[in-house]
Length: 324
Image 1 (cartoon, rainbow, N blue to C red):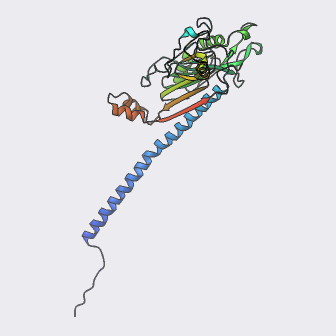
Image 2: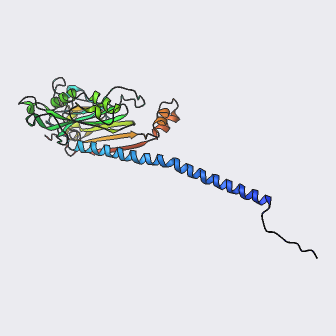
C-alpha cells in the first residue's frame, strides 16, 4: 500500500509574483521617500527666507516710525510719476535743490535690472534721519556728536543694505544747518559704495574696519524691490497759485488728498510707505536667473512666481510734517 506525502510550499509562479510585487512596492516607497527628501530642503529654505524678509521689513518699519524732519512747511522738491497724473515739477518747490538737500529721499528703483548680477552701481533706496543710536562705537568726541543719525538703505548686486551713520558737528552752529544738508554731507563722506562692496566680498565684516557707523547686509538674492511713498497733495501744489476753476470745496479737498510716488525728494515725511520685496533661496537662485533671463513669456511668468514675496504698508504717525 503506497502512501503519498504532501509537502506544503510555493510554486515557482507564486514566488515570481510575490517578488515582483515586493519590488514594485519597494520602488513606490523609495520614490515617495526620495520626493519627501528633496522637498525638505526647499521647504526649509522657504521658511528661512520668510524669517529673513520679515526681519528686514521690521527693521525698515522701526526706522521709518522714528524718522524725523526739521521743517514741515517745505514741500516736495521733486517726485516720480503720480498715479493721478499730477504735475510734480520742482518749480512748485519752496526750496532750491542746489542749495538745500532733501531730508527724505526715496530713490528711483525702476532702473534696477535684478538679473544683472554683476552691476557695480549702488542704488539709494531710502535715506532719512532718526534719533541717534548709542549701540555702536564712534570716534567722535561727545561735544561733536549730534543726537541724530542718518539711516540709509541701499541696493547693490542683489543685496539690500542698511547703514546707520552718526552726524558730526563741525562747528558750533552745525545744529542750525538744514537737516537735509547734514544728511547729504554725511552720506557723501561715508563712501557707501566701498562699504557695500566690502560686505559682499567679505560677509564676516573684517574689511569694515575704518568705516564710521553701523553697516549690515539685510537680504541677499533680492529679485524684486519696490518702494512707493504717499505724500499729502498740499505739498505738491504751488502755494501761490490761484486756480479760478476750483471751488472752495475742491480746494479744501485737495489739501488732504495724497498721491503715490516711486521717486521722492522732500523735506517732509510721507503719510505712508509701501514696500515690496522678493527674494530667492540659495537652492532656487540659479534656476530663477535662468528663467528670468529667458525670452519666452512662460519662463518669465514662472520666474515671477518663484521665491518669497512680501509687502508691507508702513503708516507714519505724523501727517507729512515735522518731528524734530
